[in-house]
Length: 220
Image (cartoon, rainbow, N blue to C red; front, side):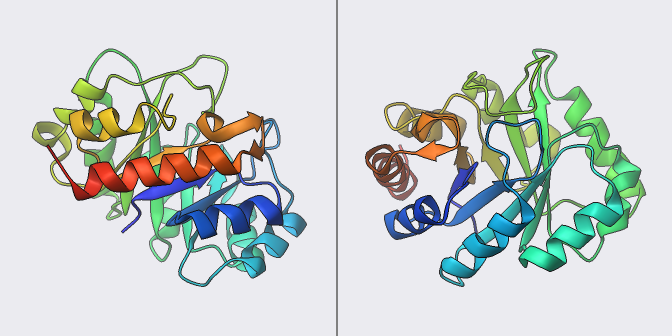
């Protein structure tokens, strides 16, 4: 189970640091327009440099099936995170792959997410987890915009007990409250532990991991 995922890893040094800090998973962003994008060649180096029990997640935005499968094989990814506009039928191409489906949530509630997952069921594919991020018209994640934690807490009536990663505007100072209020399965952070896009801060990563662990281990 992923409790803490550090996303937007771009260097071997940051990957090792985040792993040593206690992150369960590291995210490699293959969306070239992202300031945290990483080449396949660098991702291979990073994947080989971290412990085997750290989950390697590839983040893709509107990529082709062939491209995703090629990267999965080359890097040795454990999970694929779809963070774009991929329709439910696209997921049916990955029944043999552990998928995280990201949703950039607006204010209209759970209807779109629930409808999407129902369509996935009709395609005989179910994501291993959903990731809930704040909506931005100009970006596919990593904006630092915060999601409504109380809305996330109310998800069970719509999406049941599906594993849920909370993202969007998290940092070491607010992640404890976010976990207490939203009660996610895990948390995901990128910009909230950086000194600049793609460059992680050891202090911030360590504080984020520790604060997350405390909140998960001592639910209120």
